[in-house]
Image (cartoon, rainbow, N blue to C red; front, side, top):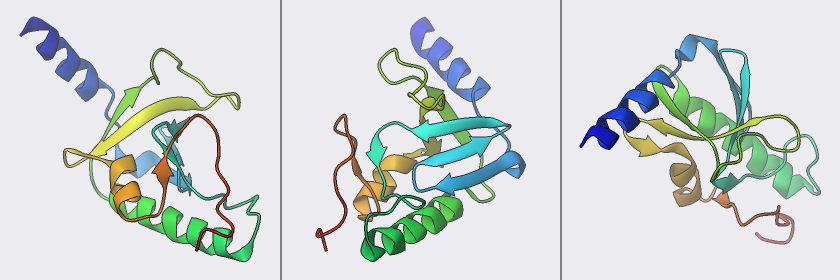
Length: 126
């Protein structure tokens, strides 16, 4: 029970005010100046899309992520099995809103895929 209370306390301490949230793309946000990569998803690329279909899907994913975070408290749980940063220096974290995992919502809505250790192509997947 004590471990559960500590985990809940740490999770609550990791939550951030949405007024300082900026959505970069379908899997990256900036919260209180910290660039965060949602570690459990692979979203289509916005800036480096390989085709128009990927770019369009990336724009929809970005707008949906923005809508999911807008006006709600976000719980940020940092780390991907011990890794804290990706190769670009972004914090790896799971985001939760209203008790739901944001990455899982994007996967359910087919705006992202589960992360499998490397990016997969989005073009030709229509």
